Every structure is written in C-alpha cells, then in structure tokens.
Length: 80
Image (cartoon, rainbow, N blue to C red; front, side, top):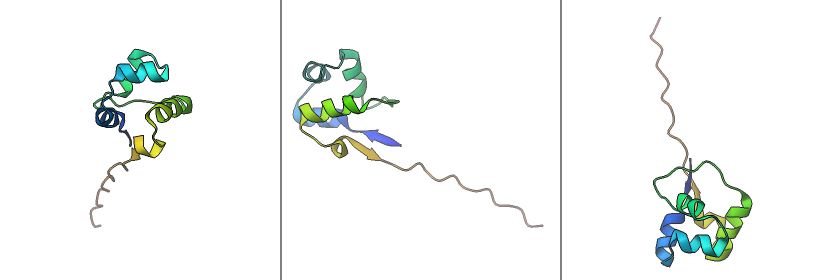
C-alpha cells in the first residue's frame, strides 16, 4: 500500500489544505481530500505531485512511502 504523508507535512510546516490549494492551484476540495490522513486516495497525476513538491520544497519520497501488504497465510493441506 502506498502511504501519502501530506497531512503530517502540512502540520509540520503550519500550512492548511486551503493554503495548499491557493499555492498549488489545486481545487479546495482536492487539497482537503489529499490532506485527509484517514482517506485512502486512488490516484493523482505526476503534475499534482510536482506542484505539491514545488510549493512545499520537498521530494516525492518525503510525501510517499510503500508498505507491503501482509502476506496471506497458506492453508495447510491435510496429510493423505
């Protein structure tokens, strides 16, 4: 699963999603949706990521991390 750490980064910088919207040109609903730490987002464009990185002066790796999904346990076969 890809984790998006925008909410934590905005908090550290003292920014609101509204300010992010104003600085990036993203719509206000989009900025709030992306900044919601509880919401799992589907996808966004490289342009959106670039705009966020530019105004916050961060690298994409500062915003994104990968957490592998838990491995499914295999069912043990009964001995024959």
